[in-house]
Length: 353
Image 1 (cartoon, rainbow, N blue to C red):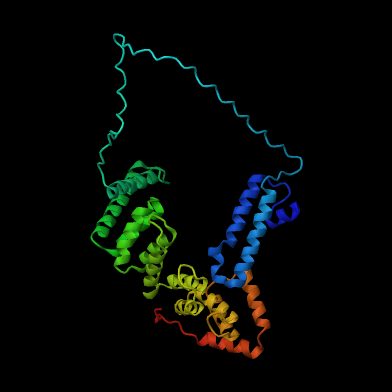
Image 2 (cartoon, helix red, strand yellow):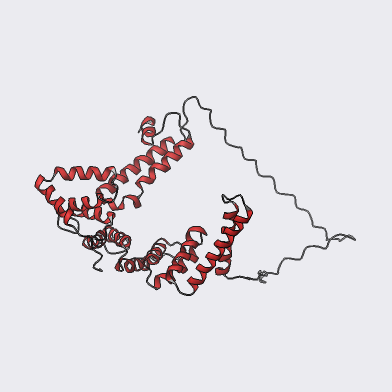
């Protein structure tokens, strides 16, 4: 790959700086992240993988790139040579002069543990007070120029947070999930978030079950436990959470933390597709076109594509796949797929697997 090809791939001009290269690479590489193409099928995942390799190659070529005529980089800073060790001298006994401060206390004896500062507050109280402080600071830097108005906003927010905490402690699963969201998104304390998510999940809150499942799968705020993470996703999927159904479908399709089973993946996709989940409908379109886990049927594949595009935007790769699919179908088959799409009825009745 030449320098011009690398610049073109990243959408940069020849006068781009190293900072421009890093920004462009970060922006473009995110478009091909595995999480963003996992619903597009094997064909497009391969395209994304190849594109990622090309972008990495381009970045390696350009990371030290400097346009012609630019100033050369500064020379590396020379490290000072280490100073020689001090000469040994015999320590004189400590003599305290009159009026001088007392000597420092001796270090603790070997085997004697240092004194620990007492813990005055529990984790929950400290975290809650931190939340109040963050809200206060946010309001201090708010758009209002009136101190009295900022004070009222702070007091109102603090009152709402206290009410939320009391509701969560009383066992309200929705409040427990919202408090967990507070800890995770605003306060960046994932361990406390996981604790509240678990309490809400145990009471059947499907969104909390999904959040706890992901934290267990990734080891965020809790020790990694992929088996338990899958169980929480299954509980959410069985209660009708469509995104959990889609994610479980891809886990079964790839054999990620579960035994690989394309037919079970198709079943979970079908459940989510019945709830108008566009990711599930596109995934089913790919499976019916390839025949993975279901009998190959290009008419049904086109039907699910039509359903998906009716309520979501399709990227260029999917559009090209659709164009190739139309070339393989007759006009009567295309008409049949359109009829099936018009007669398709969404359903919230699903099967648990």
